[in-house]
Figure (tube, rainbow over the protein chains, first blue to last red):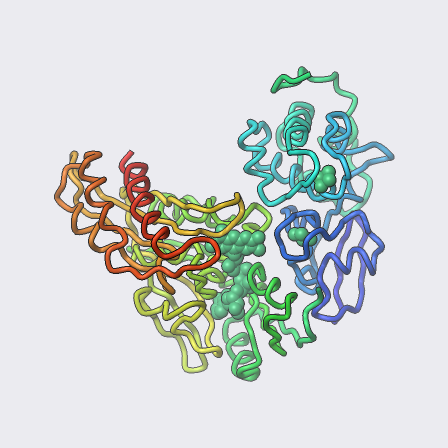
Length: 191
Length: 283
Ligand SMILES: Cc1cc2nc3c(=O)[nH]c(=O)nc-3n(C[C@H](O)[C@H](O)[C@H](O)COP(=O)(O)OP(=O)(O)OC[C@H]3O[C@@H](n4cnc5c(N)ncnc54)[C@H](O)[C@@H]3O)c2cc1C
Ligand code: FES
Ligand code: FES
């Protein structure tokens, strides 16, 4: 079956078997191996991408179901060589160890922040309940998401990524402008 | 794993979908959000040869008001239901239960109708639908028919629909002004209910005028806790009365035993969770 999908700002038209999962299409056809398969049972969230602006587990969507849609993967977040504020916050807060859960965590964190731009710890944990991490114990992930929230103005998130062209309006909110914002006072204490 | 081969069609009207299902016969299967079906296909626990994707039928997505009822289209996602103001106002029990389903990613794809049609006894929307006396509108080659919730759920993963029928929408009578709570017990955040209680009460002054309670995973189908409902009606909404009524929650049920919990433990949970659900609902 022939499908046309926008992925990270580029349109692709391909013939796929109906049984091909979106995650396999992304990885094996488009070479977007940044999106990983953790569990293959719909539980771990490592394969999370945005489909028309909402997070989904790409191992639980058929490629044919994405026909006509826009997909954003972890590889579509950076702009002009600069990381998305959530990526930067994961780095700054040591929110990863092996890094396998990280692409999914970041994609889900962005979705969460689109719905709730200023979540408390509990809301972050709740918003990430579909993402499993076997390394960090989640503490620094929660910290990173709250750090990112403080650096991103309200309203940023999947909606802000819905662009047909890879170039964003420089004034728009998810552009790199926020990354250079002054360091926030860390909430939640610790070191 | 990759599912076994299948043919795929994505009709844009209910009539086309029904025809495609009729053509496919026993080997056809509806795919809605795919959040229950795709895991099954990937594990090759099932291998239908034709999938009828109902995700491109606009009619099935709507949530609307129709006189005394709120009508939820089968393809409305959990995410859409959670945020719908009509559902929140007139069917608060559905909002409360949907909030507990799975995780955000699954709620973005999984649908209200898919959960009802899948009829997993641990599914969180069955007991609320039963407690509310929902009606399922089902389409087949001979037209549409309406099945009351009490007759719709037949057994584990089995409904009163034939494989050639499609669930179109669910009609919920309005329970405006009722207070509702869904109390769910599970082991990990995103998982299914071991037992859950869907409770809805209408109070008049300090008295319980009406109560409707549905139990999740206390049988192969959702069940009403009639003994609790009867014990509550006409009583003052006090902690002692709630506790006394909740003690009847497992009466007449025969919960299954599995790796998560045995039947006796499920009965205990039903009593405890009913007390909690009523306390939270009455507030
Ligand atoms: C990790 C995970 C956790 C979950 N946790 C929970 C939970 O806690 N509580 C809970 O209630 N659910 C849970 N679910 C299931 C989720 O709610 C699904 O959305 C739901 O069970 C099925 O909806 P769907 O739209 O994805 O249906 P699908 O998977 O597409 O279909 C499920 C079945 O229903 C049939 N079907 C679907 N729609 C129709 C229709 N309109 N007419 C006729 N037949 C139809 C299909 O043929 C199939 O047999 C979980 C799922 C996952 C992956
Ligand atoms: S690989 Fe998709 S949820 Fe784990
Ligand atoms: S960092 Fe290893 S799984 Fe999360």
